[in-house]
Length: 123
Image (cartoon, rainbow, N blue to C red; front, top):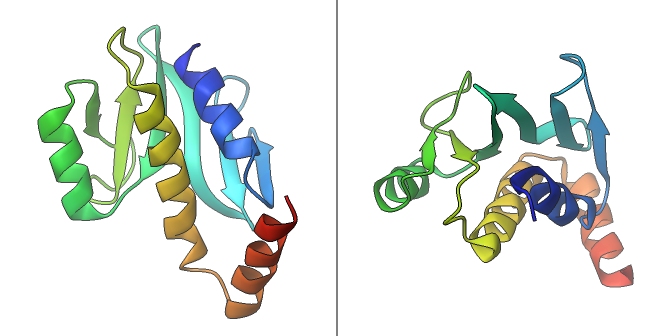
């Protein structure tokens, strides 16, 4: 499975996720309640996704995985870029997508967080 397909499938399982292309074709922006948690695009012919992370977690991921780097065109402390790679760990990608989504949930209003929690139990 390709990086973009894997990441999109993981993201679209989550409540209240929308996908837009405000930067044009070829760059999908995944949002929860209008807040960005993932971008998918191609860079120099390689599939890439940008995900939000805790700064310490991002530094650790960059040290461990050669295909994870500082977020391209994003805040380097709070975002990472994951590049398509034959050694890609699918479970890791799913976890990173979920983690990015949940970091954004923390920034939402309490009523919106409660709504999403209710939607999670219904699924």
